[in-house]
Length: 206
Length: 206
DNA sequence: CCAACATACAAACGATTGTTTAACATGGGC
DNA sequence: GCCCATGTTAAACAATCGTTTGTATGTTGG
Image 1 (spheres, protein in one colour):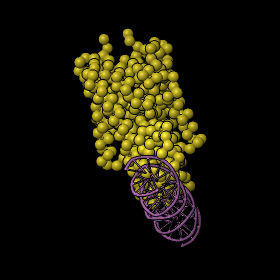
Image 2 (tube, rainbow over the protein chains, first blue to last red):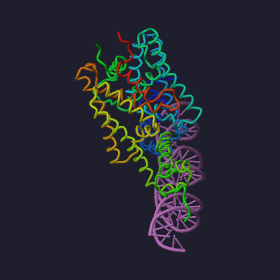
Image 3 (tube, rainbow over the protein chains, first blue to last red):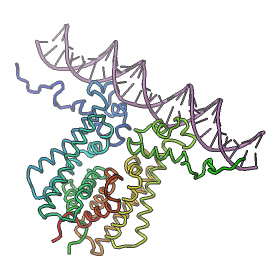
Image 4 (cartoon, helix red, strand yellow):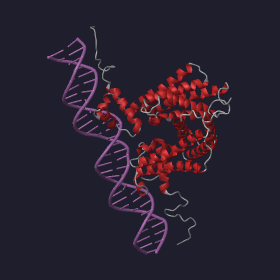
């Protein structure tokens, strides 16, 4: 076999972005903006710059595209939570760390995050149940962390843990709704501001 | 004409629910579950128990139904905020009051709240802009309240007000996603737990 | 009793949906 | 220089979309 300085692979990671990737990028953006049922294959094709039928040389179906977008998104959140869990930090530090990771993932691609949080309803079984389990795994990291923080006296024992966790998750899950890359604050700065509000509360310390 | 023990008025507020109201209830539930673009007029008609064409004796169009659902929902939130504002409470009390009202509105009809928060994207102009302005009015009540709380020393001066308000709103806007009428806690109990977490934070007081 | 009205049905409309098919181009490896 | 894989076009498919139409059926106020 001769030397291959610049192989120009047919369907590997080459200079030009692979058409399959272009399709997924366009689909992610459109699903985020108009929702899964509000986006047509013709919309996606037009965004990529090809005809609708040509999409099917690269993808299996509209449903399969949605599934892959959501699954890859959920996996990022879970990988981040697992990474933080491995460090076995004190509860407050663990929360700050995971909130930072959360906002980095949102900032990297807010549209994909919106799809993950809202379009899972349109997955058909058994994928929907499987993805729901994955999302629950992420939520349970927060439950465990808050519970541990209460157990060792770091957090207030009077907390309603369930509501508190859902409140924190709500604050985080809502961020892709307002985050803008054009804003002045970096994802880490936003994460730390949010962490400060959530952990220390609004009230002034005596 | 014989006696009428049960008048059965044609289109007044009688014993039987008006068909128009049945349509809006079904549309609210379906728009909340499957989204606006994921719901067909045939879905709504089947839920009401009539044929698709018969809907148009009661409504103008699918878009008009969505607009009315969202607008009536937004108006409830704004009316609640205005009511609290009139009382001119200290910032912490004002927040607790509006959070209570917020959760009562969510609890009364979580599906309608979901439609308000997510389906406004499918309104066409100028309605979308007008509704966005109404939503901003609600959000500004929170901004003003937090800012006032910081100004008079009730809240921590180190707060990033913008992020803090968006965090609180995120926690509140996410509630219809998990609130269940079958749950053990009342809306007011949930609101007070949430208020405690948000205002006092997770950390144990020294 | 009757005119008016509200409501319903059955059927259809043009447009749009996701997807399939057959034919045509293109370009690198033997 | 040919071959095969890859990617595209053009055209069409059955199904479904929001909505309209014409007609029938009661029910009510006068």
